[in-house]
Amino acid sequence: MQLRGATSTVSAITAESIRLDVTADNVANVSTDGYRAKRVTNEATINGGIRPRIDQPPPPPPSPTTLEADGRERVLSNVNIGAEVTSRVIAQRSFEANLQVLKTSDEMTQSLIRTKA
Image (cartoon, rainbow, N blue to C red):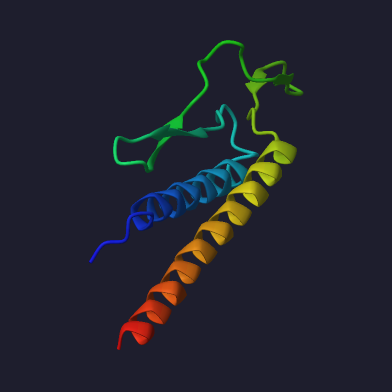
């Protein structure tokens, strides 16, 4: 038996899990020269769920640069740690909220089964 709201809740948990992975990847590459931060956007699906899409910003504007001691230009990462931390906290709380929805749905189903028995 499939519960009506379970599909959308599971898709939201999956999407937030992907968002957590992407923010972790961005933070891990904060010191990688030329790295461009990725973003996750969610798209609605026909069945009421969401599907995450991983986007990279377009090349322009260029990432910040710095000059090395020998005069060479070095392209820095465009990762914003503040934005990544904020995104991570939002994804974590959303994941927890959707997990609680599944737990509550399970408790309600169990209660209904006990009532019918």
